[in-house]
Length: 171
Length: 163
Image (cartoon, rainbow over all chains, first blue to last red; front, side, top):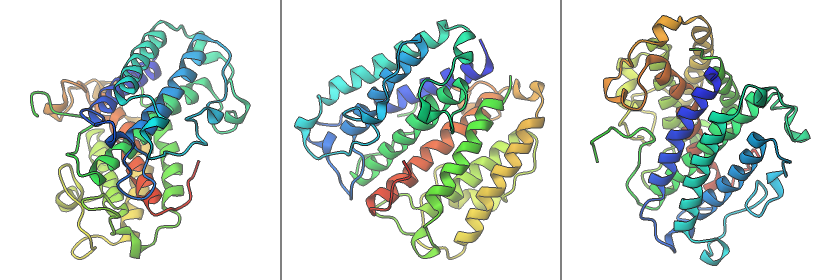
């Protein structure tokens, strides 16, 4: 397995744990709470990231890729303070966890041919010219950026901070 | 082990960060937009400090004085809402940029032998066993998570999105 894939899998695992920790014990109404301005709240962030999990699955398995920007919780969507606009947070968390595991498994099994494939969306090709760049950006930059927004949301909501790198055996 | 992939990500994060910083001036940089919030000055100072730690780990010369900067910007620090007694906004941005430049160079030259040594931060070895693992984290996810906080700071104020 290449260093790139090993690096990505390590960081992806951190993100999976972090996303769950950031949304642990967040109630239904709280999940769509916007404590300041138009902060991205947990329901939107997980809905958005789960959308991109579907994109990643398609990419890794070599299936047709639908542009996620136009999806219900894609790039063009905005968070709304309405719990009915989202599936429940427990379900979003389950889907997030499942997506993380499924994508990690698929990436471990994918051979070197994955990195040789053409970038699947034309609009990505200028700034993500290789499949390596696509995977690194979607699985590291994009997801971690949104988890950083969630960490900011927690502070604004008055919740205790959560570290992306918790120390084992410490609360 | 190679740092090529995380350093490519780090270069991308610099471009992204420059976009986030483009319309932030010194007057705003030390202003949290909610109680206990991270403001741009702390975020950029923190990234320069931790990036400098990463550089030191890889055998390079850290761009910031870690003894001086760590209390204000290191792990466990909290934002202070003015620049008094610390670096100003222009100095913070310069330090962050220099950290990126130096890390890029050091990342190209570091040996496999050094990357495979145990993580010098012992308490992190469970999750990031080697120096290379720690460097991968510092120059990708760590930078991204804090830039995410910076993007959140912008959103609260209704500043334009980059994407």
